[in-house]
Length: 73
Image (cartoon, rainbow, N blue to C red; front, side, top):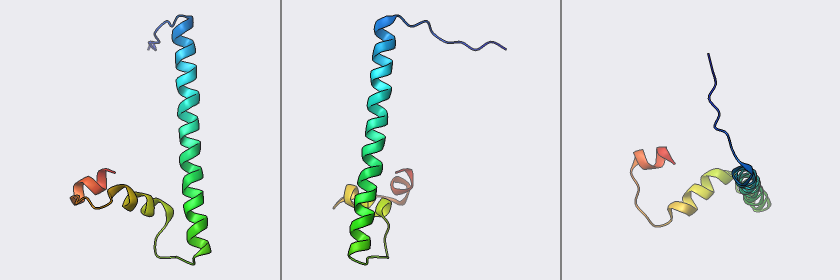
């Protein structure tokens, strides 16, 4: 079995490296945001909702969404 891997030139490698670095930074920022939300809930003694649920509700806002849309998020 062979594994196909495209041959990348220097600029493509640099772009891919930069893209992956930025992706890891976005992931890190997201985790830090969830930590901040969690810490604030703990400070306020809010135990009914976790940080992921709160962020989902914040992103939904005033919009009406179906159960299928909510499940896919």
